[in-house]
Amino acid sequence: MQSLVKNGCPYIIICIWCVLSGGCVQNKSQDSLKTLKTEIRHIIKDKKATIGVALILDGEDTLAINNAEKYPMMSVYKFHQALAVCDYLQKRHIPLSTSLYLDKKYFKPDTYSPLRDKYPQGNLELPISELLVYTMQSSDNVACDILFDYIGGVNVVDEYIHSLGINDVSITATEDEMHQDMDDCYKKLDNTNGSSQSIGTFYDSRFMRNEYTDFLKHIMIECGTGKDRLPAPLPESEVKIGHKTGTSDKNDRGEYIGINDIGFVILPDGSRYVVAVFVKDSKENMETNAKIISDISAAVYRYAGIVKIVLFCTIYRDKNVINIILWIIASLKYLEIKSNIWTYYCLGMNRK
Image (tube, rainbow, N blue to C red; front, top):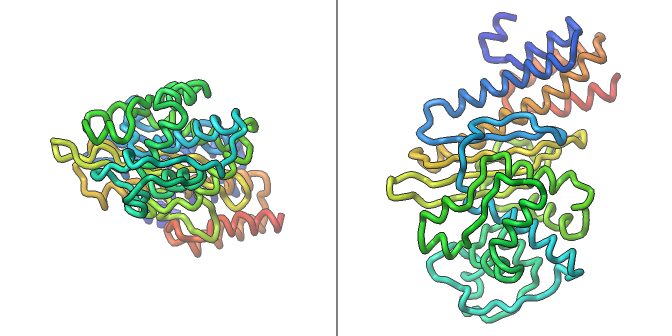
């Protein structure tokens, strides 16, 4: 036991304790949550940046770190815009296949836009569904501003998000306005809880389950940006992740204004969690910023799996369960995230 503690296996200790001791499930879950908080604080310690984290597990607020801060969302706000676009289309019974005319005036030369690069001449029509793919999967700035104009501006998005009871989000600038004045990046703010609640509402609320939001979930799962952030440590064969990144340039102080990722993770047993990680005013390099997010993602994934095992072990304290724990110890080797922790959980559920 001392060897396991020394080698950094606090979650395994909790699991073994559950098998051998019994007691209150809630207390043991709280112990693993404390371990998660400690691990995240260790990850962000001494980093030259302000880092915020929010976690919602199975629809319930679970954790918030440095949540008093306000964080520039950067392109994370394209998720909030996509929610507002879906609401706009649904209320007016407008199909996703509806085409919009893309005037060349939108095709600014000094912004990130795969759409503009593909159609430099502008003056064409594309379906709304394709514009959403550009904004959500490629983080296209031109497509984003076209959609803002289509639904009535940034205020429409801001008001819609607030109508959901999410008041910690502030959206007041288009992509073009931010490129005109970098300080406008600080006008799209969140305290991490706002974005995690937005995704939680989007994923869990029955009134949001329709063809529009189903499409949005699908394109988020197919997101092409930020593979080195939230998705990096997650085993593709075991989980699905839908997410949206946000990435800034450096400010006048040489700091990255915001390097962010928010997403939902669907686990093998059908449960899910929502996580948001925001890194602001960072003097770290881009690789370190991404690793901060991926390391936090790994810690959260471990925690989500351990919570399930804690509950299982507490209810089914028998020889089979002890075997499962021994298998986990043998194979995880200090709980490296690529291991099949969920495979063992599902095996245990099948054997009970």
